Image 1 (tube, helix red, strand yellow):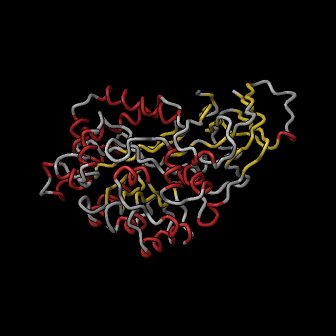
Image 2 (cartoon, one colour):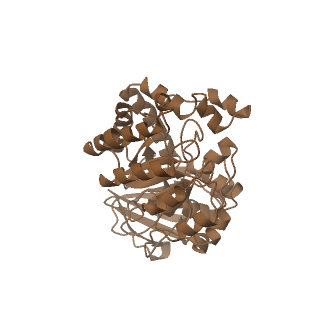
Image 3 (cartoon, helix red, strand yellow):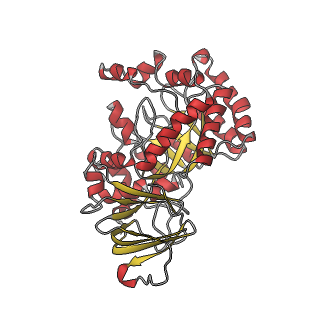
Length: 413
């Protein structure tokens, strides 16, 4: 199928030479083509340029007139937990009353609450609930998403989650990467025996996940009150033996050492990073690891914001992701995440767009095929409604501005 999009007001995130990411001051640069066309053939971007250079005499496919509209590469949301059962709005009142994330967890809420709900939910029901969320984020403009397990916390329930993620990947047009996060929390029955639970993750969960080929990556919640650097070290080493590259929850609650252990094992990304100092920045600068910020969680929980300006000024790349989950970020709207990036983190519009596209793609291991408008990349794009400028996307933080979605070269909506 061929699609020709014409009269594009602005074609955004254009690359003539592909880059793995955008870092430091370069994050302020956003390449665009005004009054442009975009040609999609055989599911990939085959050509683009100015309308004055277009010869469409022999074109026989579908034509879309995008006059007054803009075309963006689809968002790449590199950190979500969108496969979950039910919801946790009951805990919302506890948060409003002032209970901390850790206090709620100690009372059996938080991740352990989600684990209980998931255990009592069938795989088919879990799939149907998660499919609704997938379709929702597609409508928001997301074309690639990473999904973690971690609400199972038993061998069978972790496998159940990962099998649902696999089904979603097989039955939906969105690009999905799966991450095994058995070390998301310590089950109540292992409360005083945390190392025994780590042994379970290493000796039983990881081999079975690998045997069924259910995960691309492995993750650990390396933070205060969860898993230590030493435990994280053991789990990552075990996962890497089975070909799963690390991604780390790090430094959300305190200076945990999670960033350094992620860099040590060449993690694809380290995520959250509210507590990031000079040592952490130095470690990241010497690595191939993407610092990924989750402003939706900090916003929802009322936490401190990461020092993003200091990180970018030091020369780091930054990715933004939604952290879509039932307890601390119940939204997968990447456009709103960009707005939080500008409002809360004081990032420029160009920076949040780069962070949500090409840098998010890198944090999923797919920046060679996704995250920008470049010849040969997968045709995952969205067409906006008529808007005045690309800055309007994060500026109009509740407006629904995605008009049409194309994934894998096919018009979805």
